[in-house]
Image (cartoon, rainbow over all chains, first blue to last red; front, side, top):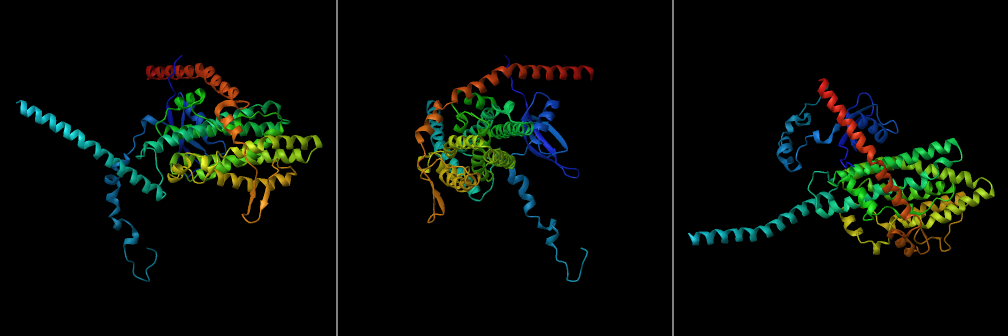
Length: 95
Length: 338
């Protein structure tokens, strides 16, 4: 008998209207439809969601943690991108 | 020419020799950085570098935990068809379904460490990896559903709440979900006990009997004494574990004894008494021989549990294969019609 494993899917749930889908975990299922149905049973048994996305884990491209410094450090020395960098004179409001 | 060759060979040998200490040095540096992250309470995520032992410890612990959830469905599944009324049946079904869900969250977490889900399940079936020994005790009466929910899930909560702060992100997140769901499990168990204890003398006796049989095994769920626990020190340093076995066991006894008193049940331990100087209950000696017997496969239901799990996998293989074949066919069809 075939020992081939069902593929791995990443599950994203929108908990209510107005919020993003958020990664909640993964599961195995033979196809997309069953992945959605299994995600319903595994991740929304207590009304945690109103919408489900499933994505084959193999299709996710992730940044490499060892490259994090190159990717993210350039943002650290650009404090002028934050409003708190600027002095606002006393008496000025709505800014 | 020959001299050149010898020189090249020598150079290679030199490079090889100098690489080994360099690599060790590198590893030490990585391990040091890793421990710093742990000390600063920075979570470790799946693709981050981690020491091999950290990975192996987590694979062992999380897969054992997953197996415990799944094997834990068996003693309770035993009573679904015989629940005393429809409400109790619906509740028990929901609880057992939750245990399946908990197993799935945990198998997902273990897969993020690069372990193969099916391999970990086969390790359970071959006896290489254990599960909580509490599930090797039989469920002889309906009152056992009460005792299990109240004591076994209660002890599990005690164990799992600190794990929500575990250093490994996916495990910690799975534990948050599990803990939210477990508290219903404990309450439904306590409700069963309350109902029995308020019932006829016979019902009360059933509750006491279940309590007598599950009290000591529940205390054993926290594992060996700290002095005997070989993994505790390293796991605490890595923040995989946040409290020791003995601390958690004491905490469990301290909260559970007053609950038993409220039910009017007698604690099956002649040495149990409140100690005013420590502000904790003193309790009798745990039968560690029994604990190790059950862990090592000689409990009342070990063979039955493993047989049930192995059969479930074997008898389900054709369903998995059929579902894959169906999915493949559907894909082909969509391709053709496109």
